[in-house]
Image 1 (spheres, rainbow, N blue to C red):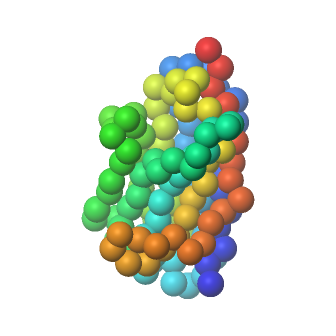
Image 2 (cartoon, rainbow, N blue to C red):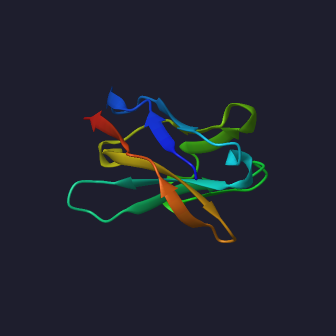
Length: 119
């Protein structure tokens, strides 16, 4: 069982940056691949980024490459999403998720954190 709690969301102006954190409980965090997803109003859930259990492999949505960076700290059971050059279209609720397998099957999800980018 893994419990996930996101933080770091908020209101930022276009062009600004935010770093989201996802704190995980459980001693098995380091065995899970982790992902970030987002859901904008009236839109479907969208993949943002994922990172392998040891951080050696990362993957991003094509539209976000170069602006977003995913990383993890297994010693502190935390995964991060650094978001730079934010745009109004990045406004969404951001969720982290934990999963096993390749590609990961995400079985555990956080409650989400709101990111709002003003123009």
